[in-house]
Image (spheres, rainbow, N blue to C red):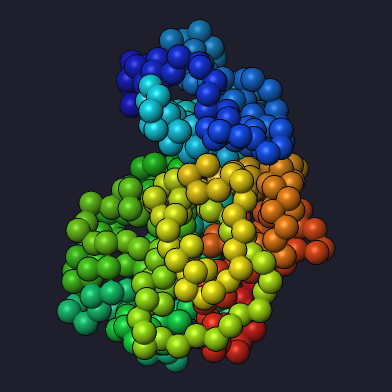
Amino acid sequence: MTKDELLEKALCCNRCGTCRGVVQDEVPDVAFSTQCPCSMTLFGAYEPSGLMYLARAIAQGDLKWNDDLAKILYSCTMCGYCDDFCQRGYRHTPCKVILEELRVIIPEKLKPAAIKKQAGSLDVPRATKLGVLTKYGIVEASAGKSAVVLFGDNTIISNAAKLEEIGFIIQKSGKKVGCFISKPLPPVSAALLSGGFRKELEAAIAAIDTRLEAAGVKTVIVYNPESLSVLKRFSRSNVEFISITRFCADMLKSKKIKTKKVKIGKVTFQDPCHLGRYSKEYAAPREIMQRLGLDVVEMWRTGYNSLCCGAGGGVNVNRPDLAKKYADNRWQEIKASGAQTLLTACVFCNANLRQAKPKNVAMVDITSVVAQALGYTGKEARS
């Protein structure tokens, strides 16, 4: 993107400030009246409009990159709320694209080492645990044999316990599913965007597209919402990418699938930014909760108004202190809901919210709940 293109996009923002708040008729608690994690915790320069002015000034040459500007940029979780909200009826500022571009053009010396390390770790491990899947009838993906495959993303590729759980669910579904077991696909995720490694991401996606096309794959099931969002957004293949949550929701619609009651009390659900705002999947987790007969109480900021857990954008690795503050903000509302169990569908939501979790609220991955309802008796995979 040229400086002129960046300026043109940044000028779309008229700094109305509306994207800081939640558009609903009544605010039950003043603590729930703002939306952007930065806006709730820091000052104006950290808010979406401040970041857009930063982009404008960088593009015009009025500001030069320095440590202070880098600190502001990397405090953003890139949850996408400002971009999503602006599209709902206001002047559309492409905040998501602008923030990603700023992370590409910032001088290399100012990029946090922790974020670069996280992005650089997205290589296929020498030894994976994907072979566990064969116990559940999941076969090696090869040409013409696997129209549906499970994507071995970086959050499950070495997690045998979670793979056991997912394998059990797939086996119970009766669906024929494959996986690239012996030679996994590149485990891409939003960490590459957070680190500003767009070229590397596009190269990995191109390699994935080539292998999916060669194997005749039509549908890919993805566990990690971050991997799902980048695959849906950047893949140029004709493959359909769906979340494991959507797979479970569709499976539970079958009358042949028998489930048993899962006793976890009153539950509420944390919408992951990359599953909701980025991938537009809000319905599947709620379909699952309804099908399983769970006692659900929604938080006030939920669905497309859901508050980010605080882990995104590399904040969890670069500024863990700030990520915990963001998580504390979310827990105020979780506790106010009266829920006894928080369900998640994202490994990063799970990890970040867990560090601020009160003792009287349990946390469970929604995939684990589905597996338990289907009769899975193995140890829950702590994602």
